[in-house]
Image 1 (cartoon, rainbow, N blue to C red):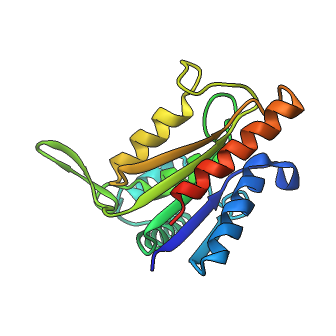
Image 2 (cartoon, rainbow, N blue to C red; image 1 turned 180 degrees about the horizontal axis):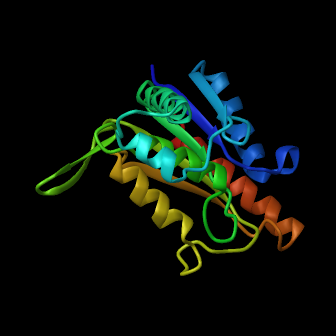
Amino acid sequence: MSKVLVLTSSILGDKSKSNQMIDYAVEQLSFRNIAMTIRDLTTSGLPTLDGELAAGLRGEEHLSLRQQSVIKLADSLVQELKSHEQIIIAAPMYNFTVPTQLKQWIDLVARAGVTFRYTDKGPVGLLKNKKAIVITTRGGVHKNRASDHLVPYLKTVLGFIGIENVEFVYAEGLAMDDSIARESIEKAKSAMNTLLV
């Protein structure tokens, strides 16, 4: 039976539409007795990389205590990712891209020699046989438009570490009109039901 890693990244708490969508997904998986790990990236204490931390993650010698601490955290996040077959990511669109907290997680798990490696034919992702579902909520409508930088970014970065089976569930127009928002949420729930393990 697949284990599912659920990542939330909204800073809006109970008011978050992406958190509400994740709650729905978790409820559906619970009905099926699927083993889950739920990680709220906004409360996980993930650092924003700076020069010192980036150097530590690249394998610099004589690591500072701060570097050692972040490497330990990054290693645990990678191990958590490796131990799950499916990943569900809540990715609300903030200013046309992913939330800072999701980017912090990506910066800690996308690591040369750990989740991808460089070869003479280019980079190769090391996390194989995994499926990702990205639930993306937006105030406006951006799907398949130039304003959507979130989807191509996540496709690229997940593929870069080897997760090529990525499906997107869209809930859009959530700030435009209540009826549009309700319809969009219901369509997103229906789409999600077909994708869950």
